[in-house]
Length: 202
Image (cartoon, rainbow, N blue to C red; front, side, top):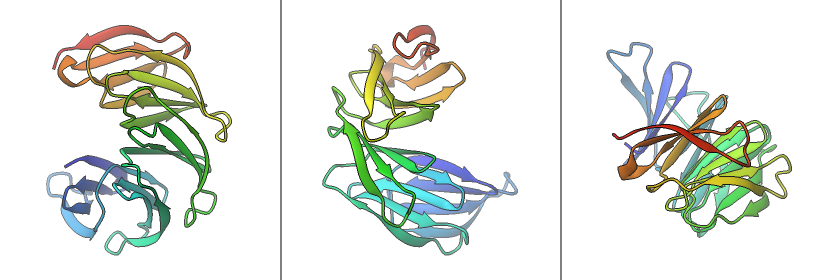
């Protein structure tokens, strides 16, 4: 599997074969209840699932997990790697296209509103407050202010020793999956000057 997102008693599992929706109310015996022909990163917000892929972004209504309904999306020639949603905006990590911001007040019709290039290959995104944390391949972690989604602006970075594949943020810490260099833990209390405080060589 490529990625998983949780929505109540359901897990949305993205694989090369498509999106699978599993009932996990009994964690010992997950049951497949639905599927959709889309693969890539997946992010769930309420009853909506945002799924990325080589053709851009798709928005699905998963109120009925057995029958996901496509609401709309945004087509782009960029290979969208990751997605995160905050408020009325979705943010896409678009590989060589950097970070792209979309207004999703109407999730059926995402509207491109802003973008910023990253030095390498934007793979995934975590949102916390007014910042988007982007795992950017050989260029490590890039920290981008999205206080104004129409003009996202890089405010800090940390060049991890490996290849930053993914990132999660909790409190003042960012956790970077850094390929062969394992897990890197960064203090991002000051987004302009992140500092490594720990690591684990997986």
